[in-house]
Image (cartoon, helix red, strand yellow):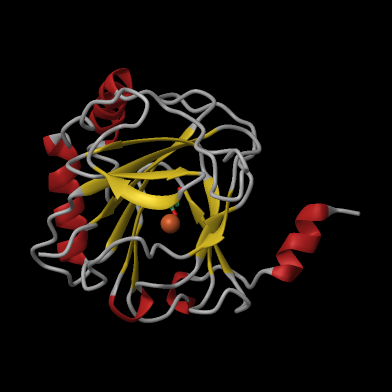
Length: 219
Ligand code: SIN
Ligand code: FE2
């Protein structure tokens, strides 16, 4: 059976206008800064290396992760949370590069969220087969701030579901330089990434990277 045909039938056609209120697709918004963002994320990973975290249920995540900024998202057998220390290096997470903060604030502003100051940036690294199952971003204390998600390197199929995990999903192709912003009525929408297809990208080789900017602490 042709699995991609099956997936096409299971998911709705990905038209950006279908995504609903509170979701903005900024195609190519990060393209101009693409190389600088990749260089800066490599510098972050020099200090806090990528690692495969374990879920509270004991599964090793296929996506490798690191963080930068005052807080970092971590998962282990105790649960999901934000921590200002990297559990692997036992030091604080690297500072958020200026090019990250600026781009995140500009993308949020363009999407109707002025004054977005992220205090956490989760950096995801996908290689062939890596995926992120449908989930909500709900470990943050402040749901008034949006999520800003920057795609770098290899393309991927992003999925948006609804507010319930059983709601049907819409698939959206994201390529190098695309930025997605979701907030307001969409802040707790389920989302995920389908298994990465093997390919090579001029800047990132066999990988897709994603920067997810959040405001984790309340003010
Ligand atoms: C996430 O949901 O944290 C990341 C999504 C992505 O990698 O595009
Ligand atoms: Fe997420």
